[in-house]
Length: 452
Length: 96
Ligand code: SF4
Ligand code: SF4
Image (cartoon, rainbow over all chains, first blue to last red; front, side):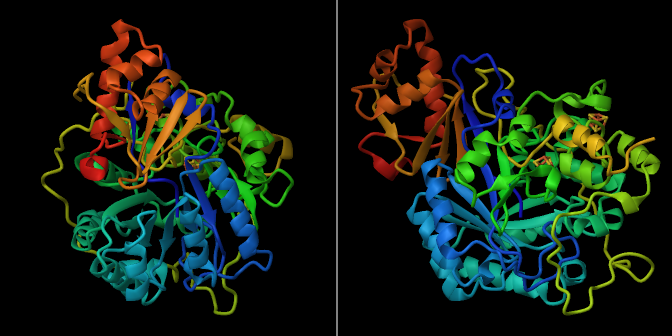
């Protein structure tokens, strides 16, 4: 689950700054708040960003969750992105959804589809304030189930069918782009169209269990280019949660804010109430506080020292001399952090290839920072994830569209009078490098490896 | 985007929520699930006055918009109308 997919547009009048400049300084309340209600999950996806599986006994109670919702209402948080784990396995899930929407906090939740029966679908379709995001990471069962587990393709498709049959329109079909499914982008689009859903593509990040499989699943350089061309061709039809702004260095900027929103417009509340700068950054370095503390979420959002630092001006470090820095901004903070790269340098998937160079030079992988709190299932033997007996190849039919020469997507509103254009996908985008929060503190701690 | 007619009457769309921010305001439409922003406080003031004003122009003037800037604000309102953040008055959901 990731951030917000709401397109944003600017309404003009005279204003000296670009909106993105304001966003970098932070907002009174997050735009893209992810709330992982539980670490419990019926699946064990190999790339789970939150290392979910088992419920954490310290999980927020129903009453505590309602208190958080009351607070979000007071702060006028428009909606929350609920995820997990599989949030629908919480017995009070529907109660909390109803409570949130009755209190003017919209809900978008991510699910693998396990609980989306025809009855539930009816109920969801009837509530304007609820949106659903069904996860599918392969357009065919072989590709999907390889990553998400046996039977998960059928579960997702059944959920989508139920949603469509109930009259739910424009729910999201959410795909994490991997080496194995980049060739299926057109097929994903066709599936989304078939079910009246909107396709949402997001980036595989080395977070949670994603760190274990990132080396073998993250798209190759050629695939990144293919993905970029495809995104440009599809413009605002396809949501990305601002996931791919590091690809802007290939040419024109993709629709979106092109900004790392961590702690600025994005944050995560985890199942036990811990507040992190970003759902992809579950690590003590990015822990801002806990909603159970006096002052609650609002105080953490507005006063935490970490968020204050993330909102102060950042410098691009090694990237600042790059001609693409203005749109790429050095890429994703979390991706750098969990691959052991300096936060004020290139993204591991830098389209110029600097990230790969940096990865080659970095210290031993054993020293990489570890996700805080592994909730993976232990009852069943974990599936092999790497090595010769690991993921193994998936048979794919490669195809490429001939019509990729797309119309240009309008650039963000550079001019204050340019009207709208800045489609912010989910404010999940990101771009800065938390120099101080990340790099410098890591230097102090001396823990993670760094470039020679 | 087209400007709105200065004599027309508007209101915030009933499904839109407005949150003031230091730079202006954020608007969220629960129906279209779109987020928009108002880049300055004056525009926010204009938008908040729309529902009770006899015309869009009056809302602007009351909010202190200078005559010379009127076209800019009417264009901004045009943008908001296009994205259904504001709706013609008395027409309610019709615009949606
Ligand atoms: S060098 Fe840095 S700014 Fe330039 S493309 Fe690579 S990651 Fe982006
Ligand atoms: S770019 Fe920033 S907000 Fe986006 S996933 Fe990476 S760390 Fe999080």
